[in-house]
Amino acid sequence: MGSDIGTLAKPGPVRSKARIHLNAASIWDPGTWISPRPGIKVRELYGADDGYRISLVRYASGVRVPRHLHTGDEHAYVLEGAVHDEAGEFPVGSYLMRPQGTRHEMWSERGALVLMHRLGPIRFLGGWRPGPPPASEGVSFPSDRLPTAINAAIDSPDWELLRPGVRILSLFEGPPGNYKSALLRYLPGKGIPTHIHMGDEHIYILAGTQEDESGSYGAGTYVHNPTGTTHQVWSEEGCLALIHWRAPVHFI
Image 1 (cartoon, one colour):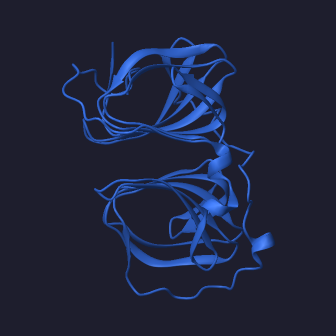
Image 2 (cartoon, one colour):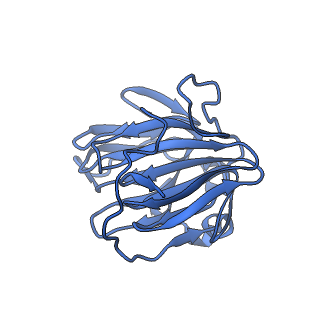
Image 3 (cartoon, one colour):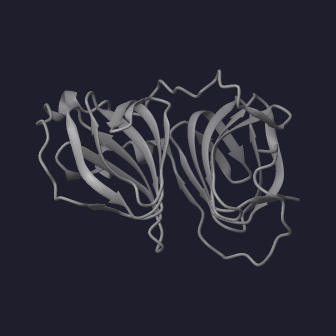
């Protein structure tokens, strides 16, 4: 992978869509979470008509999600605890890409908090089968707060220089014009020059604070920059962000 965020391209017509900014206080308010199944809590961050969904999911200790089919690619980043499937255990800091067509079970022995990007819904193949009963909610879920221990793959040799003081760790890259996932690390006082988004960008701030002309975004914040967004990005104190791009950006 090169040092740019995708392939540079000349800007074309853009769609007008609302920018979304959810701060940590609104995301982590207990009243914003729903419980679709026993032992699971969900906070929806974004949803699109094409089935694309972004959500935070809490799994209680001992919860099991039965065998299911992914009708679209799923990207998952473990923020706290650990999850398991037939391939093994994935602790905090793990990034998982389950492609369209994946069939598997998933469970968490000690509870987990996961940031999910799904490009299509999942379909259960055998109904909801009960697993081990979770403990009481007061102790079974990993937290009701923003996680503080983030494994950011600091020692990975795969970090690359994007701009002076800004490094990128590529997690996944699909076909050109499709989507890309990466971690970005800003040193204090560093940033990225003016650019235009050729597709939607979804940002989750893992640590520190990121700024642009529209505001300042601390740890636990979710930001959606729609197609056509033009801005600079910087960080006065330093920042670590998990980012999904639906298409490349063009530096102006």
